[in-house]
Length: 138
Image 1 (cartoon, rainbow, N blue to C red):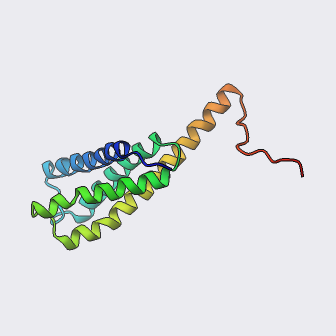
Image 2 (image 1 turned 45 degrees about the vertical axis):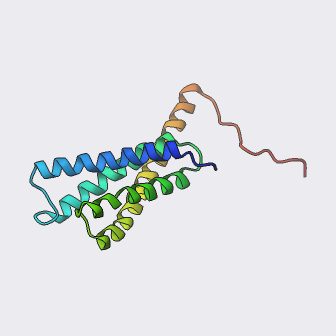
Image 3 (image 1 turned 90 degrees about the horizontal axis):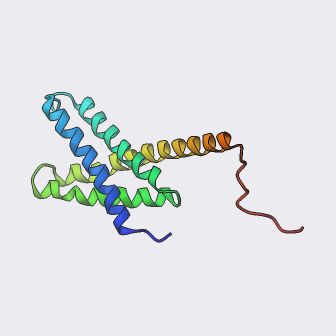
């Protein structure tokens, strides 16, 4: 698959924006890693998974590869947190594991949602899906 940088950057911006918005909401509510670490982590994890779900639904082919590129791009975007002294380099490296978990959760949910919607569409129209490969004479 040829990865479109424009689409990867767009989807990385979606994931980054959703996690940033969740962080702002948590800060407004007074929730942070020091006072409520599990709540802050879950808000970050779920908002990122939501971003990866949106990204995964929009891609029909090579979803896993695309989401891997999006996760790597978001991880690189987060280098700015080190430059701004918001995050240490050690915590940035560890954040890669959280991004992998976000991508796995979002990708799985996107797969389930697209399978469910395509199955529902086929049932409404009464059509059966054509096989993707036809075997030749044997």
